[in-house]
Image: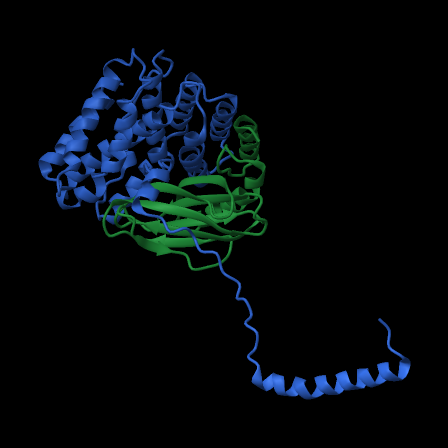
Length: 148
Length: 283
């Protein structure tokens, strides 16, 4: 789906009072975005606010890396949502030197981890499409950073 | 080959007897054939170089609302929204770099005041953002989206809590993902405007509170400054960018130097405030 078409859909969704995530989604990312959208909305009830939400199409073994600045004292939640083609999506938080700070231990398609830094710093969030149902096609994978 | 019927029956009995005897013994003597265990795929092991090479900056820059949370967490009581000045920025200027920075500044003001501002003030900020998006060639869809939010604000059909969510989303998920006709510098310059506006207010809050021991955690973000510098200095700069972008580059250089300090002093924080003000005052 083109960006402009997706944006039009997003605008329409907003008009109807629903939140949208990113205007760059491909068709197979819609399910991931819908799942992520629900998580983000629900999170506001518990004091979370969204910093970033984005999505990508990943084949098995592929990953996306996001550089993030996390403030000392704020609590962060990094959530993932993937479409039905995903079997196991993993999120790993690395510090600026590449050391693993935290990673989700689940084997599902909705990974989540929380982190509360003691110093403000830059981190890498790695989102891995570790295992897919159909390894010949990509899965739509969404990632959101929320804070409170 | 064929067997006569009696010989075939004998042969079958012999085979059955043989298998009955040997089968029981083999069950105890022969090792169980190894069952291949399913190998669980593991995420790729990434080196620091892998991470740096593949990293996207889309989530790098904290939002002004996040800065407020960080101030709260640091025990500084200031409300940034109360410190937002009443700005009137001209959005329909020909220089796209300036439009991007101005749009970012207005976006920061909007995010920080959304819960408390008068309806007319919110409406004006939304219209300024809409104009900025149009000037940058962000497409008619985002323009329609911002117009829709504006109309719902004016008609009192959206709660401030829901507005916070929608504007967070607009700032953190939609605006960074749009392709602008004005080029790839638009997103970082919008983000630079928002970050500069927020950092200016945070520096002021730290000065007011005298909490210089907290300044490093609130204001020292070398990766963010480096990211902005890459675009401000990079190719594709509007040749007619003028003094705003020149001052932005100067201010970012100052901030980059301050980021090399192990801890931030009172003087550093005051320099951050004056450097960021130098850009904002030119808008």
